[in-house]
Image (spheres, rainbow, N blue to C red):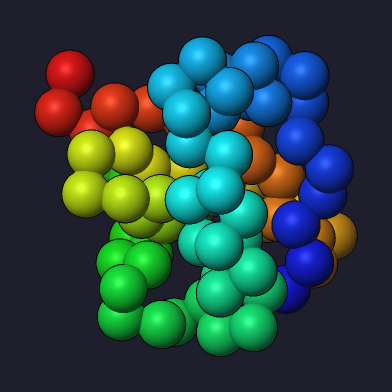
Length: 81
């Protein structure tokens, strides 16, 4: 599935936390095989909202929704805060 271009605030967050390269690699892997085990894709609660996440690295996750067979990254967050 194709990932839509990132919103500017998501890009700024990635840059601030020095995650640009890690995100790029995770996004490429996601587009090739969204079920790859290292991404650890999961649906978030409440499940009826159909919001998902995938792992950028051990600490950060990208939160996304599926719109018209495309992925829109809502935000990237620290998984442990």
